[in-house]
Each structure stands twice: as structure tokens, then as C-alpha cells.
Image (cartoon, rainbow, N blue to C red; front, side, top):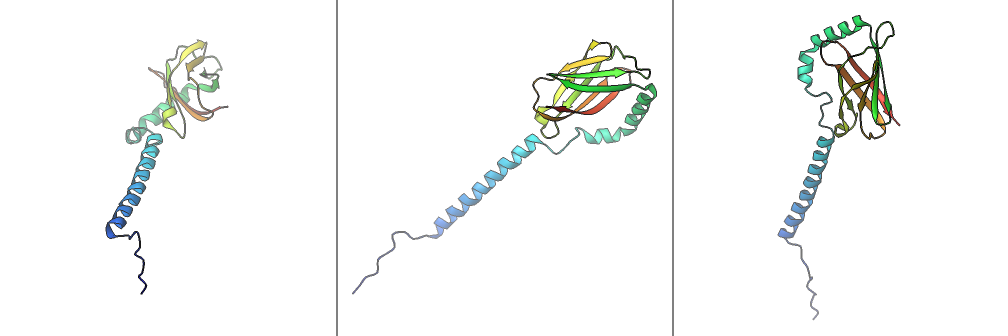
Length: 159
């Protein structure tokens, strides 16, 4: 009479339970890491305090009209580790004495954003240190502090 060999290992109910808990635990952990990383690099809000900005939009329109009435123009450039802004009046003369403040924003990663404080380096030319920037597209926003209704928003490329 031949006896059948007993299997050395048998899967039982608690084995299946442990495997299922481990499998879904790994899935939930990886998802939590991905979600946390995604929210840290881009929280989903492109414009900070967008509700307040939308509520105060009429004031923004008035400020833009006042700036258009001045007839000022501005150009911006990234040079080495500095941001340069040149401001000219309606006659093409340099505008001096502005106190410009702004921000350099990276479109894909808010952790690269830099606050800028400009100083006048020549008549009508203002510079701010930007540090070592990664290559790519940047958005420069700057406005004059005080009574002057001047604001600038432009895109710059770092190569």
C-alpha cells in the first residue's frame, strides 16, 4: 500500500490575510508618498490668495489704466545671476527713483521661486540678485512700491 506524501506547506486562511494586508499596505504607502510629493512641488494653486485677488480685481484694472496713462515701458533680462529691468517713460527717457520689488517664479516648481528687491544700478536700470537659477522658463513679476502705479509681468528664459 502506497501512502501519499503530505505537502510540506499548506496555505491557510491567515497566510492569505497577511499577504492581502501587506499588498494593500504597500499600495497605500506608495500612493501616500506620491500624493505628498505632488502636493509639495505644486499645491494646485498657481496664484497665491486667488480669492482675494479676484475680489479686488477692479482695483487692478484701475491701476493698469493709470499705468497706461503714464506711457511707461519696461524690458527685462536675465544676466548671469541677476535680473535687470529697464524702465523708460513715454518720451524714452529713463525713469529713476523707483523702489521695485518682485518675484521670479518657476512654472513647474514653486520651491524655486525667488523674491526680488531691485536697486537702481544706472538711470532707469534696476537689478536684483537671483542666485543660481536652473535653466528654463521663468515668470518675472515686479511692481513699484509707493505711489507710482507701475507693474510688470514678463517671461524670461534661462539658458
